[in-house]
Image 1 (tube, helix red, strand yellow):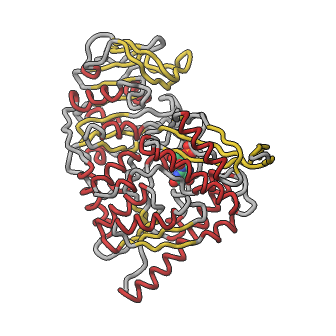
Image 2 (cartoon, rainbow, N blue to C red):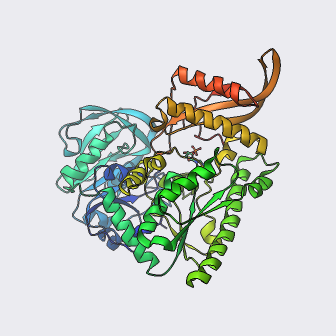
Image 3 (cartoon, protein in one colour):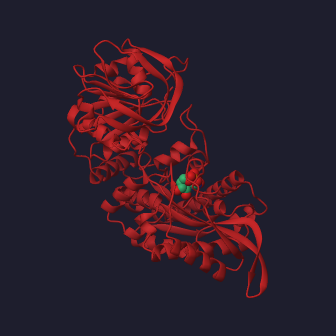
Amino acid sequence: MSLYSEPEYLRDYRVEQQSIVVLDFGSQYTQLIARRIREQSVFSVVLPCTAPLDGIKAYHPAGIVLSGGPCSVYDKDAPPADKRVLDLGVPVLGICYGLQWMAHTLGGKVVPGDKREYGHAEVKLEGESRLFKNIPASLQVWMSHGDHARELPSGFHPVARSSNALAAMEDPARRYYAVQFHPEVQHTPLGSEILKNFVFDICGAEPNWTPQRFIDETVANVQNTVGPQAHAICALSGGVDSSVAATLVARAIGNRLTCVFVNNGVLRKNEFEKVQENLRTLGLTVVAVDASRRFLAKLAGVSDPERKRRIIGNEFIVVFEEEAAKIVTRDRRETGYKEPEFLVQGTLYPDVIESRSVRGPSQTIKSHHNVGGLPEKMRLKLIEPLKDLFKDEVRRIGHDLGMPEEILQRQPFPGPGLAVRILGEVTSERIAILQEADDIVVTEIKAAGLYRKIWQSFAVLLPVMSVGVMGDQRTYAYTCAIRAVHSEDGMTADVVELPWEVIKRISTRLVNEVRGINRVVYDITSKPPGTIEWE
Ligand code: XMP
């Protein structure tokens, strides 16, 4: 069984250039490995560990990386891989489970550790290694493993150790390298250097993969997939992801793409109008639908976060289907074309990993509403050109597509909108309060020159009422939380230490200008253990 499907946009498309193939054994960090490699301008693709040898060879691998994974090599359902990946004649780097799989497969011995190593660790190098070129003899790394290799396969020697166990081994003659820690995560500060050594020094890869190349390949692939006549529709939110996905696809099939932008009633202040303006500048064919009343009617009386998400997701599908039917009828009259066959979505990699519970690697944490739903109901084939990318990679692609910075630098905004920032029931009154509060937060963060430096900064309306005093009058009103986080990809986040002056200004404005708020608190939780949104 494969853990992930092969990336959609590459399924019928074989790249001509060389790549580093990452075989996925189910780790949450697998895509990060590919992303770190792409950051070096080297093409990298993630394939399931069960990918057939021919499928792997089709990507012209200059090297193979074996990812981490949640299992032990001794588990009954331990993810398997074809042993012959080790005989392709290209260098192999095993990471965490990848190291254990190599050790086990090549005749070493993997044993359960006395204790699980999780978190920061210090690793000491033992002698020279090309993998650790220019790396100090002692380095900070991130570990997450239970088992470890006790006996190395013949030909291997140890290269680094932590206080508990072997941390790296290699067989340079066969160009096999393996590390027990995770070089791909930020918590291993020199991890990118280690991957760079593997990619360039050991694999001899060329740094020739650029956003422009991604654009050209995606456009060609979309043209191939959609063919010369079929039509596609796109659910556009006005955010970075769907705008970039739509622009890419429009570049491939022009006005055979129609975008639908739905006002679900929980957008930001004036957003419905602003987004339409932005989209016009992109030259996209857009149908804008104000369905706010319908959404709010469905949300009446609902407080449960997952129910809110489901309601918004489902209602979105209903509205979208109706609009798609209208587009079909209209266009059939005008141009005689058939129904759209394709649906374009701006799904990013973190949306996929957090929404889909694939055996082991990640539990479903929240059901992000832009993943799934529509295609099954509408029998549309999905085009998700950004499915393997992270937000900052998407921004780079958008930049190279010539899109305005105002769109590209927008902070992420969740599909279910303000509904997941209004704790408790979502009412028109509460939406209006939060729209004003959110507008103040965004305005002040922009005025302080911080908007682009912060991943997300926003207001959350809490259903907590408290007593205050204003102009000698007693008030009894809601509490507003301010949240500002730094993140690279939304999967983890650190709280931003906003300047006190900025917090005070926001707080004063919120209480003075927004009727219904009389108290402001600052959320200082990181992710994990918190999530970025409150619901
Ligand atoms: P959490 O709250 O899960 O958020 O830490 C991670 C990132 O995802 C955004 N988010 C969503 N985006 N549909 C989206 O398109 C959703 O349902 C959704 N829920 C959360 C969130 O704003 C943050 O950037």
